[in-house]
Image 1 (cartoon, rainbow over the protein chains, first blue to last red):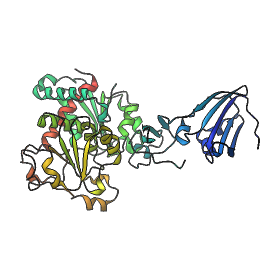
Image 2: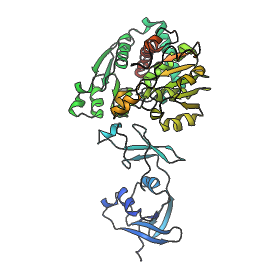
Image 3: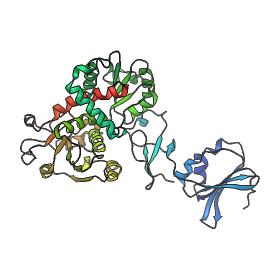
Image 4: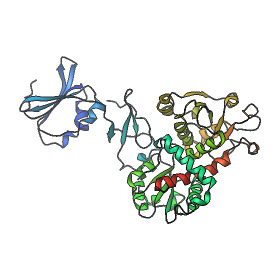
Length: 142
Length: 304
């Protein structure tokens, strides 16, 4: 299957096969009006299969979340049909409204308008803790 | 504008300075009697407390200031559904400093993020209780004269005991400190305290169920209450509540200069027969809490 190259925009590549839709949702791409293509189970020399997202618009997207959900993705920035920048992602220091605190004693359990904030407390072991009650985030399904 | 939510926010230098101020207050109370004249402390207690609230209030009165507030959630706007953030913004209009106790963990942090005046965490659920730790530290300083090279036994509810978590965080910064963690299996210290504090600081510790076996090596024995309000299940509480009761027999093998501490209130975990033992420090510890809260109020209000 061929998908036309994009002129100006972003390609999120090397997404673990099956995670493309989840990233689409977490990055809130449904709110954009530009052409977006999601490739599922695309053949990859590096991974066997992969997902890929192409966004055909020159937008400024906060991609910090990618480091938490799928740390091996690469981001290519395209300008005039050429890759002008290739980025890898790292674990974000802070996650806002990405994961929810499961501690029933946490203030976020009763004040639901509070942002769910988790901070990276142990980089080596990828440990995030709730900003408010310090409860460790459970490993997500992704 | 500075708040105190977690004891770890205070550097060792700041802790030393607070202790020096508290010691000076003990020596020269008159010198401090009008330091907070015209200032108001708001005590926002969403959960019942006697000691901490009265200690904060006594501290502010002894500094010449005034106090306003409430002592249970039902008499506050939270009963009508007001958020902690809104309460903090509103109280900022009326007072100069807030002391907040709340059953939900992180509530004082939320208050500090929204208030325009300093917020002191006066206990948030089973999480933190930094001013109790300040009281504990002054007691250790006055009784032992040092913070390093001490073997500290922590006994009882180490899972939900917020005073225990804060004390471990504070004492782990000193050299030669060893912890003996004495609790039933179900109330052991949370793993994050072990990994993020004890292991990270390279602190020696052992976990045991045996209070008597641990007794001879202890310089400090910190008893805690099994707190009914932390259990969702009454059955679990009833099963665990009498796990440890300190009495004169259990102290037979203890050091002569052991310092017995308890954040109070106690139920039955220390027999009243121990009260007359010169090693019992828990009522003095409550008094020390007032002095440290006075020192803290002065620091947070920027009053020399």
